[in-house]
Image 1 (spheres, rainbow, N blue to C red):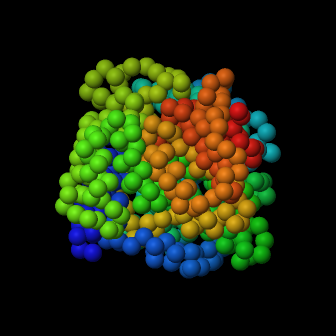
Image 2: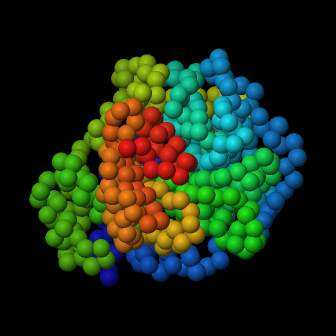
Length: 487
């Protein structure tokens, strides 16, 4: 066992290096560092994951505070340098999830321009762990994108609030504008506390916005939200069951390029790298000869080939293996894209510049003066199952609509990892693999299983709506309608 632990520590250390070399975003560094520490300390994936289910994780007290007047106070008059015509209401502010600790979560909420009174309610969560969901709001599926000047906004015509009322939640405390007045909170953060606080947020947010209490509700997210989304859904399910009433009208979940299972996650990476001409035959053969999950024939040989596997692709963006890199010191950051149809590799820098302007923070009702893409204040992550598949399996029995979608040019959490994870569930096929389309082009592929649907988005990276906004909108519209994407 000593040699086994050593091998997978090496693997996770290599993953960290792989992510830092490939990507320009702090998200990658956070995910890699997290997996490095977690896999070196917790070699058994089975006991921990089932312990999560066996514990009564949903039985939290309904921590509800009076919310009178808060909705009106949170309404945004106008964001600095927003487009001239904004035809929807948007809000932002804080919901206290623990008054004793002074812990409060920040949200941004964009209502639909049309049919806001009937469109469903959607919660969006970015991953990390510890990265801001304003990434989703400002570079992916939100109503605005930031121009390359870092000061002005332009409209995202393919924003998801066209078909839903969307909440972007910065979670847990310490991420983005969310905070705690008790610094020790940042040293005791993990999957369970994140699910608990997100649930407390939702219960109180619905008191603040009572018109949404009975609305159809969906949870969406990407990357490490492969943990966040199912865990929060399971928490809602247990609390509804305990209360014997529908406290939150949860209808479904959708996870994009989600890290949901360590075993299939890593092996999906290796196979993706080789099949996309990013690894040599020799390296791929070495991985499959010497590396076997928790049963390595030769730990040293395995570790050597893992290092090669992550070094061979070179300096590319693992989140989209065909995308350009952001060159901050070159003219690329000065190029004007100003269109959601043209992916800008430097967009996170524009967003960071915008959100750190004092007038923007005032308009957003933010109480934290420095905004970061990912948290530097969460020093440790105290619990995380090595697989979320048992939770997903439980949710399937509850009748929830469950979609796993995947951009097909992401090598960090690739489509192969997602497909291998689904294979472990051994689900019967309900509707065979087929293409789906947007604007008379193939948008991706879909396969429906009993209780779960797999959707790929063609030519999209890890942040699907950033790379393919039109296809992402078609995909999520179909999900909310309870239908497969159009053939």
